[in-house]
Length: 257
Length: 267
View 1 (cartoon, helix red, strand yellow):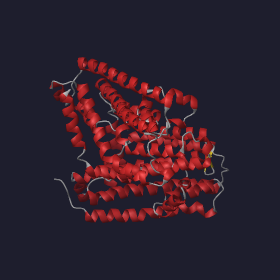
View 2 (cartoon, rainbow over the protein chains, first blue to last red):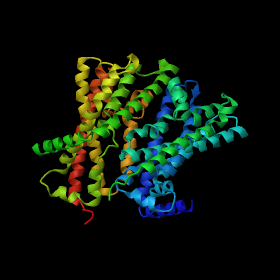
View 3 (cartoon, helix red, strand yellow):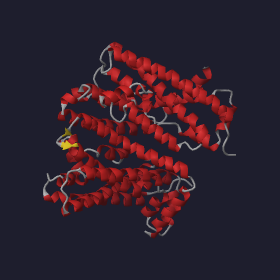
């Protein structure tokens, strides 16, 4: 953890050398995700509800999902460039050091320009809460915390899968984006609106529904009480991801010089 | 002119080399389109009367949008160009007896078209065989199809001409990352990439349709499904041609200004 802190400080110092560019990139990041919000806003100007969810409820869902994703992203986006790390043989250097590999890979690249997105996520999160007509109680606050934890873990798991697959393919696989950026993009609406089959997939294959749809129902007083704990169950998803990563490390043969 | 056609051909055949990337892209875009259509279906089921296009036309719009993604996505700008401006390699290009604007224009055009050619057919083919409301419908009429092809090309032209403006501006600002991101999100929103323009409220839509961004993907994709036809279509095409010429004109002016005061970076 101390090591991660050092990596963090290092990247921050490097970045402060280019302040204007940093600021503009932040604004850009902010605008990109703001588009999604505007898109939703105008859809709901036309339609009053979608599959029984009102605008306010969808906003709450969007805020929470975006927050989950942004948290995971700020931790684990370092995996994004992992394919180039493998191709250039930099991973060898990681392996010979007596520290955890994952930590080193993540520390290699920390992007502060994501700050724009995190700020936007935080803004959406707060806005979603303020307009939602949820009657808050202790259980619901716990549910939101569980959602944030579960969501971060699930998305981090997917980033980890992406990196682990690079061990086998050397190249980064673009289609994994469906599960990361795609999930952020389409996670703005509760999973159930995409139909029953999609809901089943998102429950049992990749547990998006467990961190989004079910606990959301709980917040809106429409779900069963045990929905509260489903985000924690979603954390189990991390286990196979981690095993895949371990398998990848074992399988790793160096490339590059 | 011949030089630029040569550039176009070179880039085009280079673009065709990346087949694995194209395959991955196809899967991604297919999944993306399916989700988008499922989302619109949910809204359609919620309130069919408020739906501004027919559901079929919406699906066709989404499929075409994904199939021709490479033609219209503003974020697919060329990093090589930005890099050459930032690290000074631009000097080599300036030594050549060619016009920078024309060369980059033909190059970007070739890149986009090559990418789209590789990716569009599998997506269109599969989409055409999907069951009725969800798949890709046939074009509204043979005439609509011809106009679709024409406006598709003009639309790519507008997109590339707009990207050229960004390249030209980076001559003056040096660090292009920020302005690029801002420009990209503006294009995404106003061109109908976030949600198709008909879904916006009437008054906003009228304004949006006058902007150059509406001349990118909005026009060809809606002509195909017959959502845009008759008098409004003629007007839209006129606007599109106007913007194509105007953007190229502004780009050329910027190009001339940049060439006068260019500082080459790096050593």
